[in-house]
Length: 493
Image 1: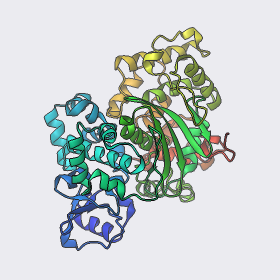
Image 2 (image 1 turned 30 degrees about the horizontal axis):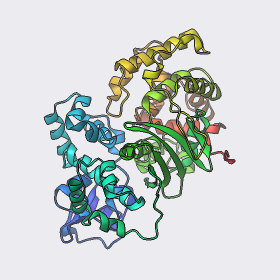
Image 3 (image 1 turned 90 degrees about the horizontal axis):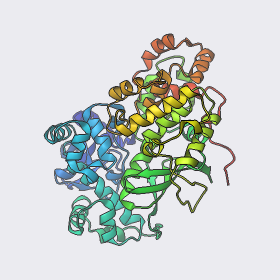
Image 4 (image 1 turned 180 degrees about the vertical axis):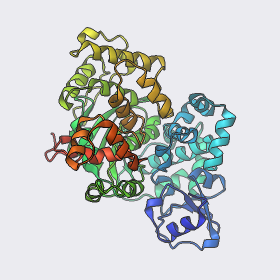
């Protein structure tokens, strides 16, 4: 979008926050870059320059605006909507792969050479993978500087900087302030003194309908791994350097996120996965406009604009849970998952609630005795086949995976039909056009609304909903009286 100059100018002049994260505005006379919704008086048109990423603006010599905090804007929805190599690269960079494995590791995961990845990412984002990772490290550093009392040396390490000198230089270059000056600007705010615990605000593009988003996560929560407590959805997280516990509470203009981490180097990855879980980088206006062109869906969209697709923080976990949920009720699926957690999940300590375990990793399930599973033999074989494929790498469900290839890999496994494949595509892979035409809830909704109930006919009708069929599913599910469609009125204690 940053190349559509007139459209960008209109967005800046109207302070339209729908475009935050789509592009960044640099101002030649001040040397700063802002988000489109910056509250200051818009600059003169001749002084505006537009960039596709904060990293590109930084590389051009501009520093972040202290007023609108462009580094803290929602991410571009493109990286969730697309499945090409640049989008896959951006999802991996957001998950911290470049910090942990370097650009070579990123290229290896994507199956390209370093040179090819550098060229393609730079052509679209205006900056290479290292610069994009550097911008992310700067945002993580700012967050820790402003919200904790941690020593600067510890912050530099937690944010992923190789040295204190690099940390100081980067913060000064991006924010035009030293780390100490950045901390001194925050007055009256609460700073955590507990090692590894901090609170952040997760922004999103409005509107956002939290009912089915949080309701689905709560209704399907696996005991010990997830819970609804004091108005917040809480769950355990398996992270690259350790584990964590997150509490997510919907607020009118953000999601309140409280993270407890065993290693603060996982902060950026944890935030990225929480945003992915809640689909916070979606473009709800574009989704709703397309779905509302269907007269059948239009009233549903008008009644609940901004529905999101509830996803997962761990794609392998969701794939296992999808198999456990084949042809059984939500309650039965939770029971099966809870048994696996108690038998094979890694125990953790939760000082603020009742979470007890991490969901078992594929590796921990590799030696699973099928006789201990209270389910039909065919489903046992399906589960073991999935676990084996995940361990061997025959199925790739990672953030940088190819959606089309992953579907083919899943469909080749025994016991994987359209419902399981599309459920995983929708909630684990994040494909916005995934469509569970054979789902019972979708079929009942179709009949209620006068849509063709057969999978083939409904799929044909749903072509008008593309590329947002996964969001249409949320509206269809919401027509039923099911706990997944509402946040509980009574909170657990």
